[in-house]
Image 1 (tube, rainbow, N blue to C red):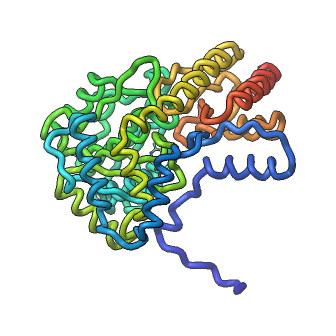
Image 2 (image 1 turned 180 degrees about the vertical axis):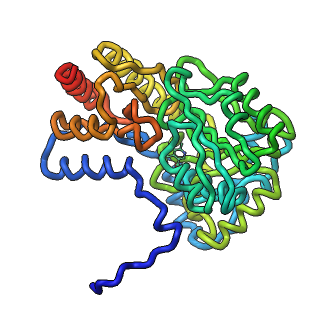
Image 3 (image 1 turned 45 degrees about the vertical axis):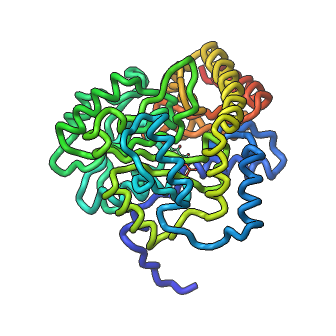
Length: 397
Ligand SMILES: Cc1ncc(COP(=O)(O)O)c(C=O)c1O
């Protein structure tokens, strides 16, 4: 190679690689060396995609559904999604024109941010945040601005905090409920209070609802776009098939917005990925058209997740020095480890090297006091991993 320094774009220079993937990669490397790793890093359900969804995709392939389709997605799938968001989520008046399917919830977020924000704009988000939000803002030349939501406030942003953070450069507020990494779920009252600020200050909301079905303790999910016509006009609702139906590898996300925004999103997609994979959308269509069957599969997964969540909360509660909020959504716990006076990076690095337990350092997610533990892994690994974490923490204390 030449000695010339490579000249990258301002976007590429500013981007940082995903630290959660780095943890997974290190854990995988140790596993490949034959080490007995207990991985709590997973961001995907440890279940297979339901068989009937796979069958529908296979049939589509055999039927020759292997060509381009319209950029905003398979028409029948957009119809069923409009129906779902109208009837289940209560967003009135939706039609297929309000829906875009994309190659993954992650890409739906990127499209939403792209359609609303540009250079010089500010994008507000709570910390702890999902790892990709700040980078996505930077990728359109916008500035991520962080609102701190610590465990002392249930990891939730208050309307006062949101109001105070908005400037005349603010375009978008990103909300993720149920949350990755905290598992926090906003109730209706809290969401309505945030929406009041959003409408009064005339900004947009990107509501990332990808974990909308993964709820425990009887809590309910609410879509802010359902609160009023004005709320729907100011909200881009993002979701997808990855987490609910265990379809992470299929790369299928959804986006719901007023027609003008959906059209802009679709235009951006038409020049980037064209459309989400055609035959994959037939699998998703089967899930939407056989909702009862699909929800039975989701229920099975939820039973396992809830059992593991309760077990982990119980075990973490008995480890000296650890304080863990009762997460009620998604499949993550975000315990506070600040009593050990260690940076979360050091804590996780030592935990991995000394006890072979992989966790995600909170610093990567905007909160150095905590670490993220996913319970999308087997009961056996959870039990063994918690024995090791217990031992590790007792040695540190
Ligand atoms: C909060 C949140 N939003 C969006 C996504 C994107 O999911 P996918 O691109 O797999 O559909 C994830 C995945 O980890 C997530 O945690």
